[in-house]
Amino acid sequence: MNFHDSIDAKILSLRQLTDRLALLRQRQPKPVVVFTNGCFDLVHQGHVDYLSRARDLGDLLIVGLNSDASVRRLKGDSRPVSNETSRARVLASFAFVDYVVVFEDDTPLKLIENIVPDILVKGGDYNRDNVVGADFVEQHGGRLELLSLVPGESTTRLVERIKL
Image (tube, rainbow, N blue to C red; front, side):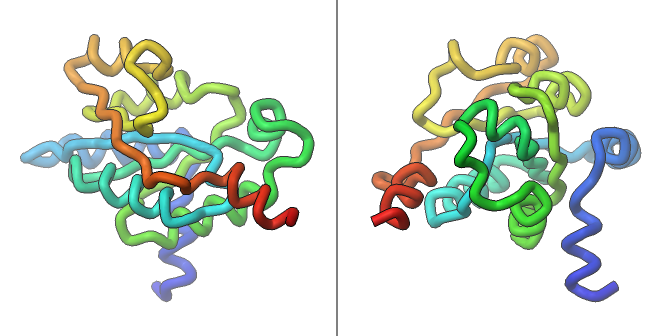
């Protein structure tokens, strides 16, 4: 398999992902599954730092990626800048990202309930009370980790600079 194919092999449907996780969880020791999600519209240094630190928390990092329609509903008609295929391939190209799954909903709750991660990760701009799925993960023996963000790095700020 060449590098190009290995990137695409990391982008899975929810069904493919849950099947893969079922096999992986039969291994001993069971892998620690880390999950995070986002739009990842224009990937920047803050995303790279965040995702690499998320992966350091476990054995497997799954990134839930908002679909184009979902991003438009959340961020407005001018977003996303990059389409979901492009965004998924960029994320899958990182060695520290094991799998990418695109989701259509406005929140990743359905994904979280199907994946049942050991660790749910969000950025430090969140607090425990506004992280979708935190209760579910904790009820299933997992935990929430809030990671600090790189100051001054955001897609919104990047888009504003590009417009200048």
